[in-house]
Image: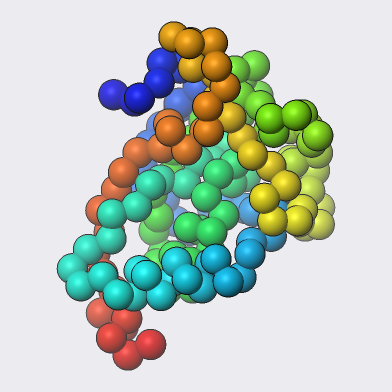
Length: 152
């Protein structure tokens, strides 16, 4: 199913959810988010997008802040999410552990968002025993183009 082999206990659920259920832990790079919004507006029929990876107990975004804010700006009410067991030992928040999972959770809860790209979440590939970018466990979704794109 994935290009890597992960602990089967990591992924809890994959589905569309209300966009207001999840919370950020870091800011985004506005130019990058705006470029993504422009790209999505350029599509004619549908959007194919990677799900946003979210902690299943706290609803905190682990990976996908730019996708989240772009979809929110474009008026999407439901978005694709992969819920994970964030505290699993086979997930780490950064290649050099400069930030802890607890620090990420606390920044989201407090509303004091971290700088863009403060975290670089990785998941352990059990086949190679190498840490890989966590986006590799997200699922692809198709979203219909919102009609109002033509008028934005």
